Length: 139
Image 1 (cartoon, helix red, strand yellow):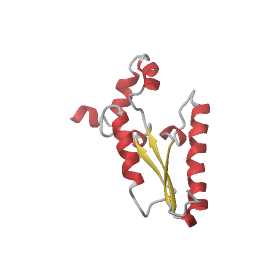
Image 2 (tube, one colour):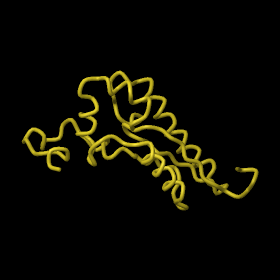
Image 3 (cartoon, one colour):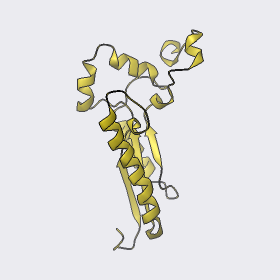
């Protein structure tokens, strides 16, 4: 891309696990955090060549990788409950985020969470202790 001199866009795929502290996922989380930082560095290095570098960070997505997690009792329901939009993401939704992010001409070095709002969930949310309904129970 640099040699062509015409600019362009690169969109990597990382994961919200790169900025969440999920137990038993250290190896995966570290690798995804590394991808996110690589994107930011590449954006700085390639910007002068009009090359935009961004990433999409999916949350739980219904892929073959998720199939093994589905076997854990209640896991899919917990993920769906914690997503602000409810449910589990689809590969199509992640692909749409990649296409959208790649079309933005004045955006570089950004990580877009395409997770239905899972990364907004907080284990210390006081509303939960007050018995306030979440998205899944108020729909």
